[in-house]
Image (cartoon, rainbow, N blue to C red):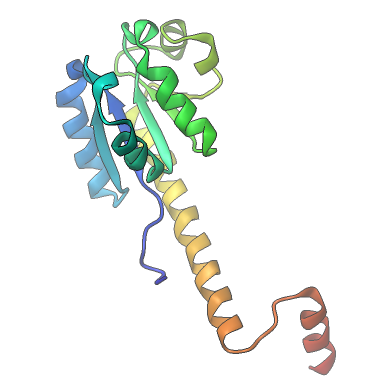
Length: 166
């Protein structure tokens, strides 16, 4: 693995009425180098190939769900939240023009413990920080792999020995 590989991948999950906003949102994420893909959930989402849908969602490290007044009625929300929780991926709820209280009022109770953003720049800043953490973790992993391939032991005992030897 090279340290330039990005492990982070954001899914922006939305319904048709948010399509224009999603284009803008994905464009701004791309400007900030936050890797993201939009998933439009249509009325026939349950007829999709489950294996293919699962494959795509397994590639995701962070989920952004665009909340609207119809979210309370959707069945796909439980599926997406389940995928995210099952892999311990962060879930962010976002809605333009709604307060955090309005967003929480329009989602089932099992969703209200996830982070809510009413301000897109604030959410983008959070995702940039997550990307920085992801990049740093990859650099650490790369360095660890390089050291072990050079024959260095990465244990506490090896560190104590190295310090004692000077």
